Image 1 (cartoon, rainbow over the protein chains, first blue to last red):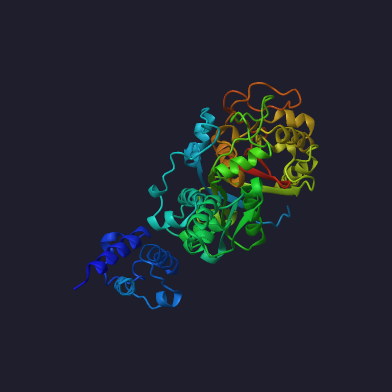
Image 2: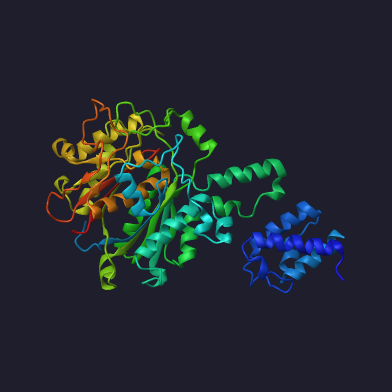
Length: 81
Length: 406
């Protein structure tokens, strides 16, 4: 079961990704960044939002490992906790 | 021009200007006497990027690139390229000029730096503000894989882009080039800076060649042309709108901002363009002037036209300024004005210099006061026109454009 914090992170990440271009209804935990056409520049912007709002610092090497939206949510939620 | 040189024809036109979206819209509204200058500036007030661009494109493009994308889309559709490129993609180039590039992005991201710190500056900052961003965006959207670059020469950028594209085709480096100019510099910073050098009209009025002219009015927008090698264009059955027949460019090497007052270097650019087109002054039926409405430009340009065309011929040719209807689009101006010139040649309607009412005794050419008038091709053949662009830095460009026989 996701915690309240994880749910909140999930909603925020999906909103942020939707603002980058993909239709919000297309974004699920299983979506890959590749299929959403989210590239490295978008992920840097996502990292800036996350740092600004949750104080979680995501470095380049962290981002490189991320393949799906769920990967990003889990990583951010684990560090924000 | 050497007889063996490849000929360059125009098959598509696109424009985003303060008179609206569309090349035909620009010419029709200008010819009807509409003026897109409101409150001392020529803003593309009705331009809504999301009507034309995806969410991702809107976010990733500075306004000057957004204008370029929309103008290019119109030009490519008119050229019949909407179903795909008619040439090997590596043989299609892209050259878009600009005066400044993404100045709005510079200002926004500099504000982020000051207010939120270096860590919050967007990774999209540089790719949005770079002067070649519009070229990159047009190239990516349409898969243009030939030579692509920006051209930077202040208010001659758009005209230099067209000249460079002509040479690329003539030299054989490309079979077609998408060429133009784009600018979106309506910012408090740019206005203050132009005002500080006393180039901007303190009254917010643009009346080129008029005795009361007191400076230019800034505008924004983009113009794009599809240029193709003539034989290839004809072989694919393209509708030919006109010919990019001549290109000449010189520099004043005189002053950072003021034009060389005798007009000689500018005249030389016009002479080079005529020679390149294989035309004498008698073959020119219309001049689309740079005509900024600054005291110095309009005087120097008048002198240049007399020197290049001869005093008698210069007095016979109608001269009008697109800037009177849309303001000065800086690095987009040369391209937008080339678009307006091709429309003038193909419709046979010369739009007037709006706001020209009080002749300056020193400036005595026919500046097309009042209303639009018919274009008369003197030689009975396809009409031809000169489009001038002169820039801060002293960069002069003249283009000779030829219409199709109507």
